[in-house]
Image (cartoon, rainbow, N blue to C red; front, side):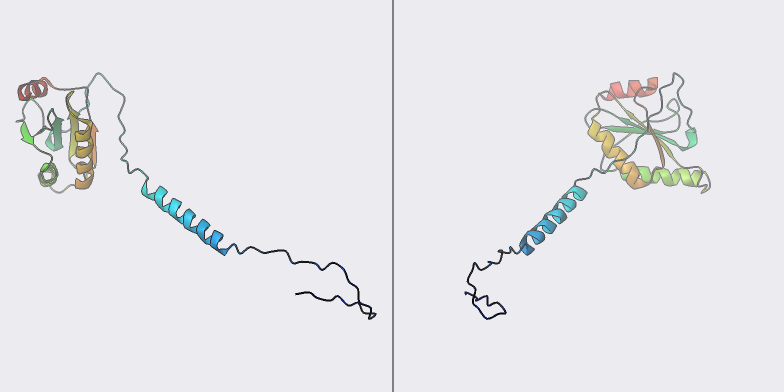
Length: 174
């Protein structure tokens, strides 16, 4: 409790005793700070967006030339409809597909193009996506995801240039 401060000469000297400053244990605060830092680092890493890069070229009045033997065109129509054909629009037969079978269709056509060009890795399939005016943006994103999963290396989004065969088919289908 009380301490006596006795000087060396033997006389007692009474005075004010010095009190020790109270110390606060900050261990719990440091633990809480590290927990909060860890929590916020985890939540920010989980909330990052996963995105694909899509580069659209500058529009030109002359349509781009694609090799017909390895080109697949997907038309995205109203009411979640997908129409597709291989090769040129004037010579092709348009077929329908749905979002459940689009991955299987892409892989089958990719294998067919690969076999047609004698397993030449430089002759990969090119997919042209043509979303019509009534199609949903969600459908375009879903098809892009399926192409990424299927390993399609080259694709283009053409929403401005439709052939007359494509327009008449889309109008006929509603």
